[in-house]
Structures are given as C-alpha cells and as structure tokens.
Amino acid sequence: MSLQRMLKLLYALVLCVSANEDFDWTKNERGSFYYGTFPTGRVFLGAGGSAYQTEGAWDKDGKGMSIWDVFAPKKGKDLPQRHRRPLLRRILQDDITLMKDMKFNHYRFSISWPRIFPNGSKKGIKYYDDLINMLLDNNITPIVTLYHWDLPQVLHEKYGGWQNASMVNYFNDFANLCFERFGDRVKYWITFNNPWSSAVEGYETGEHAPGLKLKGTGAYKAAHHIIKAHAKVWHTYDTQWRSKQKGLVGISLLADWGEPVDITNQRDIEAAERYVQFYMGWFATPIFNGDYPQVMKDYIGRKSAQQGLGTSRLPVFSSQEKSYIKGTCDFLGIGHFTTRYITQKNYPSGRGNSYFTDRDLVELVDPRWPDPGSEWLYSVPWGFRRLLNFVKTQYGNPMIYVTENGVSEKVQRCTDLCDEWRMQYFKDYINEMLKALKDGVNVKGYTAWSLLDKFEWDEGFSERFGLFYVDFLNKNKPRYPKASVQYYKRIISSNGFPNQREVESWRRKATETCSSSNQLLAADPLTSHMEMVTEIVVPTVCTLCILLAAVFLMFLLRGRF
Ligand code: NOJ
Image (cartoon, rainbow, N blue to C red; front, side, top):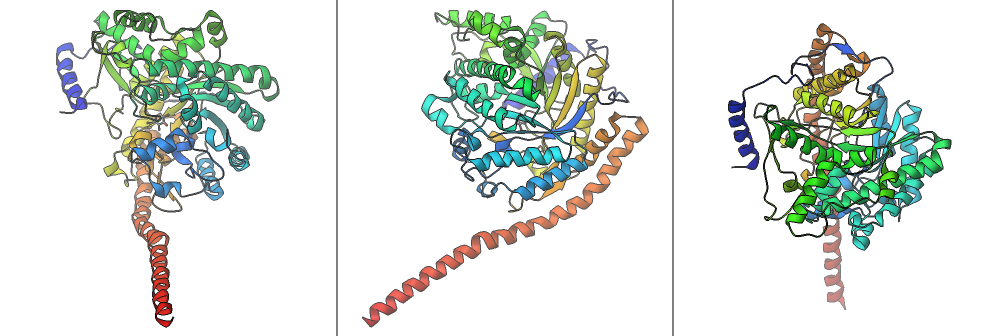
C-alpha cells in the first residue's frame, strides 16, 4: 500500500474520532463563497514561469550547464525534443500577445544564471533584454526571479554548490550584474524562488538537483548560505542601486498550510505551528526577525545533543549576521498550492536524523479533498487564507505578492483542454485571497502558476500546470488555451467576483470555447508526426543512402584497379 494511501486511510480514521468541528479561527465557514471585487488598483493579477522550466535551448547561445542540465537526463526526465529548440523570438512575441490578450498586469519569469554568468554570453543578456522590453512595450510589468534552482554546474563541481559559503559572493556578483543590466527597467526582484525546495530536495532527499542526500545537515547548511546570499543581494541593491532604480527586492517562499488534526489538542496545535515554522518560518523568521524560529533551534538543538553532537546541526548566525539579515525584504513572495493536516509524533533521535524527523510530526490529508493533478497537490482553498493571515500576524503585515498558485493535471487528462478542476481551483483560491484582503492582509499581487505547461522538475513533463497547453513534441511548440484561460481572463477583467449570476456564467462560457480548442489539438499529433518524419526519418534515410553509395563506389573502384 502506498504511503499516500496509508495517510488517506489513517486520516479517514482520524476524522471519525475527532468529529467535524467548524474552526472559528477566521469566523468563516469553510466553503462559503464571497462575492466582491478587489479594491481598484490594489491587487494585480498575472502569471508566471521560470527559465529552466520553459526556455529550452540549454546548450545554445553560449549558455553554460546548470545542475538541472546534468541531473534531469540522469533521471531520464528530460525530453530531448524540447531542448533542441533555440530561444525563439517569435515564440516570445506570441506569448506576450497571449498575456496582453488576458490583460495581465505582470509576468513573472526567472533569469538563468548559467545563461549569462559566469561563462555566459551577450546573446543571453540580449534575450532577457528583449523579453523585458517586449513586456514593457505591452504594459506588462516584469517580476524577475534571480534564482529559480538552476545553479551553474561549474559552481557545484568546484565548491559543492549551496553547501559552500563561497556561493554568497558568486550569487551576489550575478545579482549585481542583473541589477546593472536590467535594473533600469525591472522594478520587482525576487532573489530566491522557494529555497525550501533547493535546500531540502536538493541536499537532503536528493529528489532535485544536485541530488545530494546529506540527511539531517545538508538542507540546513544550504539554507544558511541561501539566507546569507539573499541578505547580501538585498544590501547590494539597497546601497548601490535603489536610489537610481527605485525598485523592490524580496524573496519568494513556498509554504503549505498546516492545520492541527485535532483543534482541541495542544500537542497537535503546536505540531501544526511547527510544520509551518520549519517550512516558511525557517527563511522568513531570519529575514524579518533576524534569527531562525525558536522552535527550530530548540528541536534541532535538543536532538543534536541527544545524538551526542557537540553543536546543533542547525547552523548559528553571529549577532552581526543577525542584524545584517534582519529586515532584508521589501516584499514577501508567497508560493502556495496545498494544505496538510498535522498531528504530533515523536521520532526518537537514535534512529538517524533528518529534517523530517526533526519536526516530530506527521502530515495527513483528507481523502475527500480533490486531487486532480500532482500526487501532493490537494485543493484546500481555506488553507490559503489561513496562511496569509499567519504571515500577517507573524511578520508584521508585510507587503505580499503571491508568486505561485495553481494546479496541475494528471497525464491521462493532459489533452483535455476543458480543465473544469483548474477553473474551480482558481475561483476558490483567489476568493480566499480576497477574503484575506478583507481580513487586513496586505496582498498586492497574484501570480497564477503557470502561464504554460512546462518541465515539472523531478516529474519531467508528466504534470501540466499551464493555463496554455503546450505540444512539446512539435518543433514549434504550439500553445492551446485551456478553458481556464477564459475563466481567469474574466476574473481579471472583473477584478474579482462581482455577483453570483455573472460568475456562474463564466464557467459555461469558458467551457464553450475549450471544445473547439480540443479539436485543434486533436489534429496536432499529425503535425508532430510529420515533423518527426522530416526531422528524424528523412535525414537518417539520406545519410544511409549516402553511406551505401560510398560503399558501392568503393567496390566499383576496387574492381577497376
Ligand atoms: C514550486 C516551484 O517553484 C515551481 O517551479 C513548480 O512548478 C511548482 N512548485 C509546482 O510544483
């Protein structure tokens, strides 16, 4: 039985025991829909993507290798067809037209570090220059991430990547170059995207590049250097660029919400808080308050001592570092997709250590939650409002940009452009954000994740998050709008959810358009097939013919002399 199934069953049992209290944490009955709009000019809606997930052309135009260029093929997750494509200006222009048509306020993308630095080329810089200029020409604000997981491979090989403190200066040099080249036009910078994944999946579980399994230490060390690198880059901007460029620098943290399984049980309540502190608080608390969350220091410190270690596995910031790191955030980016129920569980420290056992908790899911796509992604809209309120109270109501929120689809459904479940997900999650705004949370922007179907890291191309379907096998990578494009477009143009009658008509109208797109898509395999014939079969046959002719000629000539 899979772990996921066991968790579901376990949770079903838990539900029977703990009844279904309505938590009055927000005085909001879950499930109730709020009709209303965002205050004019207050919350901006757009979409996003990232360099490694969408660009292709991994070896074109002087780009160096990233850790993902090495890791993904090893895992058999990369499709060569996708990467044969050089960066196409035409595609950029087409994508920007799509965004313009949807009336996006902003587009979030990342700059590939190895594309422009340290072995990068002018062509890489020109590519991002063009992208930024085209966005601005169309009144779309660029929100630019400096690190969306694609560390230059050379820095990994030479220094061990984020395990090494030297990354702080390397990253700062790269960021400084970006401020210098693009900062006249880019006003929103995100230093790191979801450093939790870089640290935990890159250096603890090894599911992500560079694939290291340094249990119980690797993630903490990587995070320590990432936090310092973030702070350094913020200071660089603050001291060298801010007065001229007048932009903002933030970080984007991913966090699931953790809800106590039993709201009356103090141990569950604390475990749920620990879950969020070990997730988002790990990065947010140093950045807002100067040091790691107390609960992380206590738990990891105690377990390290029990293991006979002289010092905690959680590194320590000096008092100078604390004051240098504190306050280095002009806005907080939040990536949020799902929620877990949390209950307390002790893990004896003798049995090996890991980030996960350090937390002393178990994650559960409600089997009734919809899970249309990725295995981990359950649709639990009310968790979003709670997370946003948590940020408000924990970190002094910072300015928030939701930098990622969306849902994928399972591969069997991938050619279904009538993505009912995605419309529902966006409707409910954006509605919870609207409620959070009414709670006083300082949300400024929302980024649907993602504009396009793209490479989904360790899942390869099997999970599609896009508003637009992309045919990866076709050389031209055509895009087809899913029904959610129409739906999201209406949320944007109405600036929220004006009234029940109108909102209910959106779904019907959106589904009308997607069946014709489905027909277009159905014709596409033929095009891909033709391309395969012209790109692979024809050249192979021609080469064979030439070889045969050469051999034949050799025989003829031998016979003659
Ligand atoms: C967070 C990552 O930042 C993003 O790249 C990814 O596509 C989403 N999670 C969905 O898994």
